[in-house]
Amino acid sequence: MAKTATDRPPETASDWTIPQDWASYTPQEHAVWDVLYARQTELLQDRACAAFRQGVEHLRLSDKGIPNFEELSARLFKRTGWRVVAVPGLVPDEVFFEHLANRRFVAGRFIRKPEQLDYLQEPDVFHDLFGHVPLLSNPVFADYMQAYGEGGLKALRLNALEKLARLYWYTVEFGLIAEPEGLRLYGAGILSSFGELRFALEDSSPNRLRFNLMRVMRTHYRIDDYQQSYFVIDDFDELLHQTRDADFTPLYRELEKLPDLAPDTVIPSDRVVSRGSQKHAYRGKFQ
Ligand code: PHE
Ligand code: CO
Image (cartoon, rainbow, N blue to C red; front, side):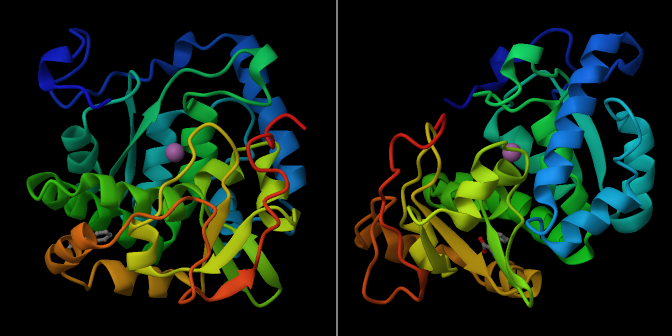
């Protein structure tokens, strides 16, 4: 679970950052990035949302090899004032939120091994950069992430992080967006996943439900398999205004009185985009 400040590794700065040390990546490590990038880009045609595709282009993520955080940050900063900083792995919640609130996205520097191309439990530099950073070049999404960081610091004080973390999960990591051409992906956990990108959009197993803030904050999520429900926003303005412009303090109090919901539940007030069969629940990942 969350670490405390005393666990900070000695080689990290006081804000837990480390140098990316780009020069020390091996040719094999860069090659893993190139394979992942090529495969994912191909699969994401007509699946990734427009803002993601624009971000990839603006940030020149198609350049070969693992991106250099400093060069990437320079491009990103010009667009939205965000930077990418390296950390050794999981950081304490407070540190994570503090970085977000200051428009710094923390990313792991390590990359998976060639035998882990399809699935990895821990986020690596491919997930963190390819999955998360393109959208940070979108001004509205960039503001949402900063506001989320501020909201995280507040939720810590109010002892409500479990609820707020579900919002991150179902939007930043696993969100879907309704674009004029159809449903598209914006969640980093799906965009960087080999199998879930098809599952999330095309499989008949999961529920796809319209995004509703309170509903999402009541809903448990799965960390060991594909999601059983995805939540769909209309656009990033909707997401930003429903979250940044609302005071969550009374909402957290209300949530204490409402029962939590299982990840596969559909409730009468849901606006259902497509109701899932849940046929592939619990065994989606390697099929
Ligand atoms: N407005 C929220 C609050 O009052 C903070 C928040 C912003 C939470 C954006 C999530 C996303 O706590
Ligand atoms: Co992530």
